[in-house]
Amino acid sequence: MRRRIRNCLFLCSVLLCTSAVASNVDRANFLAARQAWSAGQTERFEQLAAQLRDYPLHIYLRYDQLNARLATPATQRFRTS
Image (cartoon, rainbow, N blue to C red; front, side, top):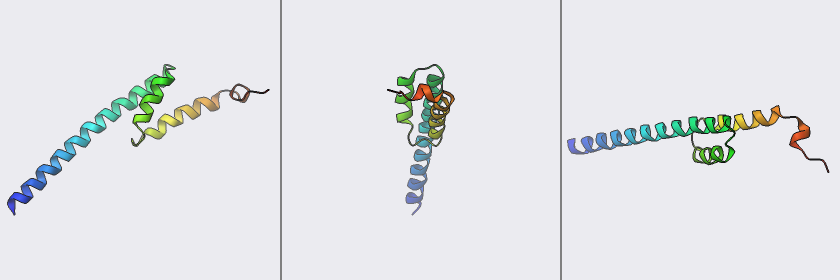
């Protein structure tokens, strides 16, 4: 019984450490994506944003895109033939 509890606690600690490392990587990628957007590196931004689809702050990357798009005049967003 004690062995099962010890194994369970070990497994939980490994999972917690793994998720902490993953969130640090996601956080770094999120910041890199925002920097890429600010620098006008749209291809790099799209690559990073695609990796962050499950990251809780991903919506803010899309907000930056939409906000910039709304800031441009409608005549520049749509072509007229």
